[in-house]
Amino acid sequence: MNLLGPRSGGFAKRVALRIAIAVGAACVLFFSPQVARADSTQTYNVTAVTTSGQTITGTMTIDVTTGLVTTGAGGIDVGGTIFSCPQSSKCHLTPASGNAVLRLVDGPSFLQLAWSNLQPGGPAPANLTLISSHSYCKFCGDGDTLARFSSGSAAAIQTPEPAEGLLLLAGLGAFGILFLRQRKALPNAQV
Image (cartoon, rainbow, N blue to C red):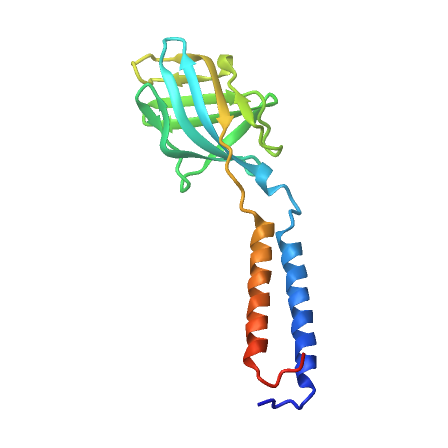
């Protein structure tokens, strides 16, 4: 039963089509990258070795726009001493002499990691290089009062980004199927 009159079917289709086009255009504008979102946050696998042979391993995620750093579930392990920076904590990169420094504290132990190619506010690099002369750990692992690092790096973990275009097309396709099913359900609909 058509309550709007015999010709309202075509009008309703045109209105629905215009709404669908407007929604699709809004989705394209909303999902298009206005800023480099992928370049602002990066997760790294951290590996380094102290001069006494202790190893450092762990993961950290850096948001270079804010300088906020979080560590992975196991924290950063330096010879058995675990340094963590959960999301509830406020760990920040500190700019120093054109470099970025991360300082973590675990009780009496203190870890400082200086990265040469990381600039807060800049793009997240694919790999970080540890500045050995400015990176050290106090009271870590084997009891050294000051353990300097002989080498170290942090390699970016590549994470796939969602295919926003495919999600948009899937949504519009579902909308089109719904529209076609609704049209077939009306026996008096004009084509």
